[in-house]
Each structure stands twice: as C-alpha cells, then as structure tokens.
Length: 312
Image (tube, rainbow, N blue to C red; front, side):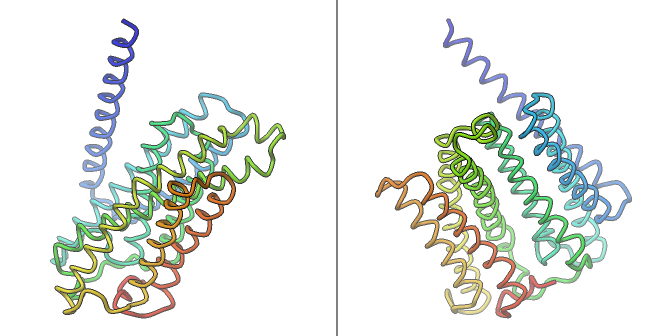
C-alpha cells in the first residue's frame, strides 16, 4: 500500500508540474499579445532574475523553506516574462514583414540562453529537491540577461540569407539546450568545490548538499545534454552544407564547438570509464564552462567568421 501511495503522489506531482508549465506558457502568450514592446518584458525578466538571485542566496544562508519556495516562484515568473518577450518579439518581427524566431542575433541569443538555462535548472531542482544550487545558477542567468539588455543591440533586423532556413529552429534549440545544461553543471561544480574547500566548516556542512549529490547533479546535467550538443554539431554541419556547400570549414565557431564537445566528452570518459570523481572532475567542469564562454562570447564578438551574424 505504501508503494502505491508513493506512486500516486509522484503522478499527482507530475500532473501539477504539467499544469504549472501549461499555465505559464498560456500566461506568457497572453502577455506577449499585449501592446508592450518586447524589451519591456525582457527587462522585467532581467529584474526578476536579479530578485530571484538574491532570494536563492538568502535561502542558501538562512535555509528557510519559505525562501526556497519564493525563489522557485520568482524564477518561474522570470521565465514567463522572458517567454512573453520572445513571443512579443516574434510578433513584432512578423508585423515588420521579417518574421524569424527570437534567437538570431546576440541580444536574442542571450535572452534565449537565459530562458533555457532557467528551465533546465527548474527541472533539476524539481528532480533532486535541492534549491541551494539556485544560488550559483541564478546569478549566471541574471548576468547573461543583463548583458543582453545593456550591451547588445535590441533592434530587430532581417535575417541574412544563410539563416533563412528551417535549420535555424532545430540547430539553435539544440545548441542552447547544451549551453543551458553546461551552465547548470557549472553551478553544481562550483558548489562542490566550495563544499570541498570549506569541509568541516559550518557553512559547507549545514548550507550545501552532500558532495556526492552535487557530483551526481553535475554529472547528470552533462550526461543528458552532451548528446544534445552532439546533435547540434551534426545539425550545424548539415545546415552548413546546405548554406555554404560544405559540412566543415574550420570556422572559429565550428572549431570551438568541437573543443567544447571534446572537453565534456573527456569529462564523461574520465567520470565513467576511469572512475574519476570529486575535486578534479569538478575542476574539469569549471574549465569546460570557460570553453563554453569562449565558444559563445569570445568567438562571436572578437573572431569574425561565418557565424559573425551573432555579434550585435
């Protein structure tokens, strides 16, 4: 009877999650239909992400259950507002006669990254029940959104010919799902290293999950999105062949996407086949995330190539 009740509880929680997700999407659609510019919703989302960061950090120190629940709710609101901005931007591009999905330039890509990373984090939080990792992940999401708001151009521009393809939908979604998973894994790795460095101290023992759990969250975040990142590279090669007549051109973006793949592939190899765990693989994830940042920011901004459309 106990097993049956647990199963029923899991089913009811899953149904509640689906209803919450559906309600959030519906609310985002309704907000996106309102006559406010897309930047209004994006800026609102950025502010909410900032508030969520503060709440999660407060929860990490105070461990008050209500703060954790508020943090989850604030993040969910930020995702709704972010999605509303994406929907509104799509509507505005359609009204301008140049419709395209809202992830084609630097501003759109960064705000899309924030949305996907927040969504992936919520799934991880829901699965493991530990909200303290939000104190490491939410600030990254806030900074990404803030960089988009304050540094990138908000202008909606026509797509360059190479981007006018159905590949824009599937390749970019897989790529940013990979970015998001690596972001969550980075948060888990940083939490692990802090726990390890301050072992025996009250902060580490009372306010952070066990090192085993942090290691598992980091590993599973990468293990789940690594095949998605692999698919992104394959899809990108197919798109390149269709657009530019070749599957691989050693464009800086292609090269660094491969480096990211090799780095996290090495992590999975070390973790699974060589039995590495703990501090050294956590540092591998931190170093791997640096390659992710180089792949997205440094390559897009400072190394012109076939992907230079994402520089503004």
